[in-house]
Image 1 (cartoon, each protein chain N blue to C red):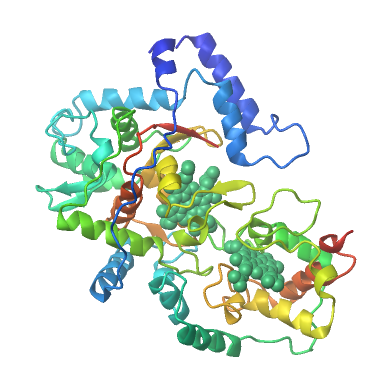
Image 2: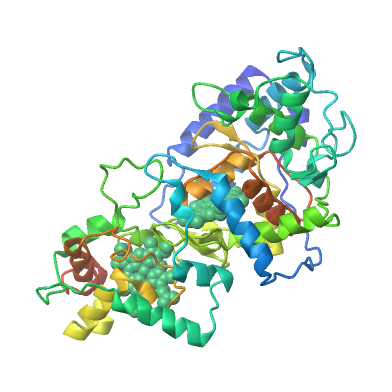
Length: 272
Length: 209
């Protein structure tokens, strides 16, 4: 991408984010608006920059052990990145756990590179001030599954159990508003204000939603990981904060990923 | 990265409709206990949202267990228990100021870990309901309340029912997807009265012809 193209792309994004594209006094849902920006910038997604940053981090020696992540096993063998995300979460023999991409990256960064776990989990999400290495690594890995069909297994008893626990967490109502994920994502065609809410119990909506994350958020100017997506929905649910890459978040991811099985992975996506 | 490369990366959302997965949900109590233990372990305090928010009351637990489709007998019992705890206004008046009510209905603030303890919680009503015709940005999780007063009138029993719904919608329908604004201490008595007025007052934009 040349700088001219980049400049015009960013301009379009800034314009779109300011809401100026919505000229007429008509209810335009946020999904329709994002469809408009997507057409305008059809030659790129700013998430590409985060993917490139992640690729560099993957290949470059790092951490106290000065090792790269090229020996990291994401489930398809040491160093195999292509297609790995389309089969995650999955059960890993070495950790005896079901892991999603981010919890697996955490394992590789701590074991291969020797980075203390707390150093990574203290700030696992990018901010305006500082990018997040684990998040950029996730962007790189998911990009290598683009166009590949989601095929997440529930054959291993632990995988099946993670799916079932994830489903229970999806329906778990608590907190001052009595919300569960299902309150906002359990019926089709509903909205909060102008934001369309996918019904994540249905195959079609789960596929569209799941395969478009991680994603570049136009309103935030940042590429966001799937763990971030769950974290922010728990915030809107008026829950306390889920621990990064915890079993609860992995189980919930398993539930959503299995519901999305069969769809071609299409991320990193582009969102409001 | 060249432009061609980027064109190749344009997002295509697959609408593939593969066969539905056959992993039936279960009322396996051992699994439920395990899920609850995981939830209790895996959340932590952040801002005003303390970890103990994941602890369920009897109503939340029943609605979760039955995925909001609680058996009739239990449903009636839960609703009666919720109704008993509604604190009705001591002065017997239900209507406040619709203008203050509209402001509250617009505010989606409150109770998240990014809200400050000193920030007052709003009503979030427009997040889920259509109310005034002027506000085109409204959610659809709840039914449209447009023209509510025109349809229902202003009799005392109507006022009382609206106050009751806002105080605790679960007294009327155990697993309704509406927060219990009075029961959970989210809104004050005066604020709930302002909202009753927003719905019923003939001058309110909800009832503008």
